[in-house]
Structure formats: structure tokens, C-alpha cells
Length: 434
Image (tube, rainbow, N blue to C red; front, side, top):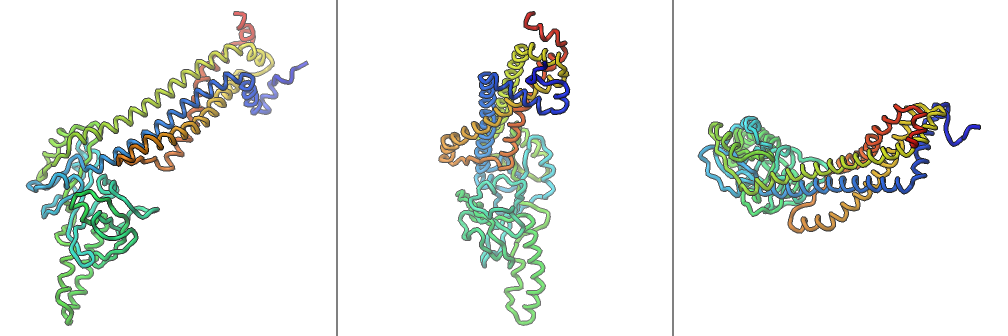
């Protein structure tokens, strides 16, 4: 009479879920061993997930703090004298300019990670002349790091501007610049750097739009003056954006790569014609580069932790397979194929490591909560923001951690299961005797 607790070959073929059920029953029969393995996976996945997210947050916060210190190098026209403290954050007033195409040559120099062009002009805003600085938000690393308030839900547009820390205006208000309404997209914090705190910032597209609007208004105002209007209005367009020449920038702010050497980069930049290089604080440059290296070290630590878990799972399932060789031999003798036995063992491994991965996510989230309330709060009190990854990154890392934990179980059990499928039922049944 056939034992119904042992599935036949026909049952395996008709219902593949029976393999998963049998794997779950095997875990239930050896609860203590499954619990220890699950706890090991939970600890490894939880610590790995928490260390990666915390490393990301700290790296982003420290990098933001270092970026507030200014650029590593500043490229200005040859012969221009600059104030080092001010020039590392933004450009200073000068009549000398550089060709905007120089950005491509600077970006091609080994060791230069980011090139942020800026252009300063004098513009009429609300009836007075103020500094207007054009920058590229996509490549910027010194202006947006000081953003204190901003319009939520959308990026900065050509019709927006940023207000320096000493300038009036609230977020959402509209200012008249060159007769064109611009909305205050955000406000910058106070830096105690005059050119930065007392300037409005617009995109390069926004500056081009202002110049275009001024040239369109000029003929109309000239005609108004000819018909008895006020002559002073005729010079308004010319005074609105003074000193503007298309295709020119005031300076380039450079950020070096983590493994770059400042001296080599300065030497290469010095070979370009009509430029001068201003270097920032070498200690700050070295510290910022070390932060990126630290994050790489955290990622390597997490990878080694998962590798150790993989070895643990492989050893454990090697012992499990050896222990259950007689049981598996009986299944083979009753009609189970080698592939079906492999699927059962792999399903058992994936179940215990997958559930351990889910528990590890909860454990990792609790670690992050404690970390944010302790070390994160301490860093915030020092002025270093604790910047969490975007929601999309958190979801991707979370799902990836659970999937990867299940894959660890599959990979760890694959070799023992593959060795088992090559043995005949007779050899498996008598394996304990050997």
C-alpha cells in the first residue's frame, strides 16, 4: 500500500506546488534549524540594508556640507584678481569673460568631475540695479546646496529666480526684472559672502529670455520717445542687462573626482589659453574626496557580509542534504525525478532565506530609525544634513534586498542539490550506512 504522505511521480507532474508544500513541511519539522538560519539571514540583510542607506544618507549630507564650502578649482580669465572666499561659491563682478565652449575642454581633463559655468551681469529689478547670476542647475554644486526654501513639486524653470539671503521676497512672489515677471522659485541661506547673498540667480535660459525681452521692448520705447514720451525710457533696455555678450561666461567652478590630484588638474588647465586657475582649501578638497572613498568602503563591507551569508547557507544546506539522503533516496525510488528533488531543495532554501530577507527589512528599518534619532540628530545639530535617499531608491533597495536574500538561498543550495541529483536511489538510501 502506498504511503500518501510521499508524492508519486504523477503527483509531481500534476501539481508543482506540491514541491513547495513539501519544502514548507520540511522546514516545519526542523523548526529550530530553520529559525537559526532565518535569524542569520535577518541579521545579515538588516545590517547590510541599514549600513547602505545610512552610508548613502551620511555621504549625501557630508557632500552637501563640503559643497557649501565652494568649488575645488575656479577658472577665470587671465589677469583677473578675485577674492578667494567669494569666488569659490560664485563669480564676482568683472568685465572679463571666457568662451562658454571652454566647458567642454575643462570637462575632458582627467580628474575633473563637474564643470559649473556662471555668468554675472547687472540687471534692473524692481527699479534698481542688482547682480544677476546665471547658472546651470544640472551641473551646479555650489548654489543649490544653499537652498533653504523652494517651490515643491517642480524643477526650476526659465521664468524662475533664486533670491540671495540678504535680498527681499518670499517664495512664490513675482518680481519685475527688465520688465519681465519672474517668480521667486526659492530662497538661499545666508553665507556671509557678499556677491552670493546680494544676487539673484537665474538659469542661462532665463538670462537669454531677459535679453530677448529687452531687445523686443527697445524699438517700442524708442518710438514712444519720438512721439513725446520720456527720453529716459529709451535707454532702459540698454541699462537693463549691461555687459551681456552671447556665448560668454564669467567663470567656471570645478569639482574634482575622488581620486584626482589637484596639482595635476591645475597643470592641465593651465595649458589652456587665456585662463587662470584659483585653488580652494586643499584640506577641504582631500576631506571631500575621502568621503566618497568611505562610501565605497561601506558598499564593499555590505558585499562581504552577503558573501559570508552565502557561504553559511551553502554549508548548512550541504549538511541538510547529507542528513536527508535516505529520505530523498526513498522519494527517488518511488518515482521522483532528480530535477523534482532539486526543485524541492531549492524551494526550501528560497523560502527560509526569502522570509529572513523580509524580516531583515523590518530589522534594518528599525536600525535606521535608531540611527536617525541618535547619530543623525547629532550630525544635524552640527549643520550636516541627514539626507535620506529618494523614495524610488528606498523601494528599489528594499525589493532588491529581499530578492537577493532569496537568490542567496538558491545559490547556496544549488551545489549540494546538484551533487545529490547525480546519485542513484540505492546509493542515497544506503548513504547513512557508508
